[in-house]
Image 1 (cartoon, rainbow, N blue to C red):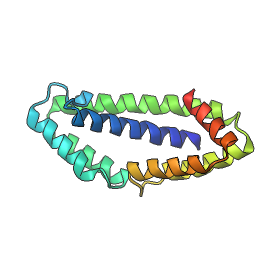
Image 2 (image 1 turned 45 degrees about the horizontal axis):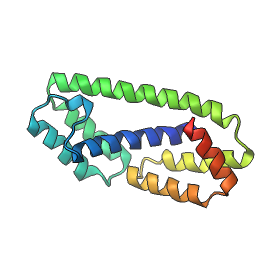
Image 3 (image 1 turned 60 degrees about the horizontal axis):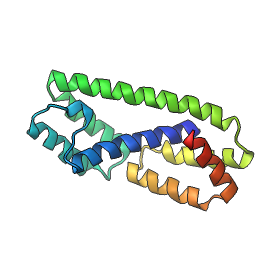
Image 4 (image 1 turned 135 degrees about the vertical axis):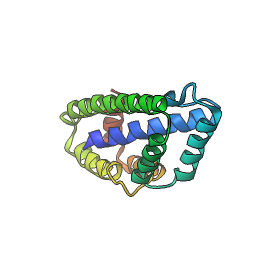
Length: 151
């Protein structure tokens, strides 16, 4: 359950990092060295889809990537592999953490996981709902979960 939260957070961090790089004039790793018009088209794609459900964003990005040069497609595939590895590492950390959770933290984890796994929510909506739920938890439970998330 907690792994889905971690996965959602990793995805949010990845999307946030890409968005931040776009806003700061940087580029995501798979667009390093790409022509300016390609970088701009990716930035426009993210902005146009930022408030859509995660599933739609993923489909839009995959569709966009599939239309790019072989070099960009290869770098994008490597980027996705790196994200997948990060997700696997997060899942392993979750398994270890949740085994030590109190019953209250496990119950909260179930609720957090439901939010994180909901493909109908946008990344922003997931983040807001997770933040709201975390703020509403008793201090002891919130601290227990936050400590586990810090590793």
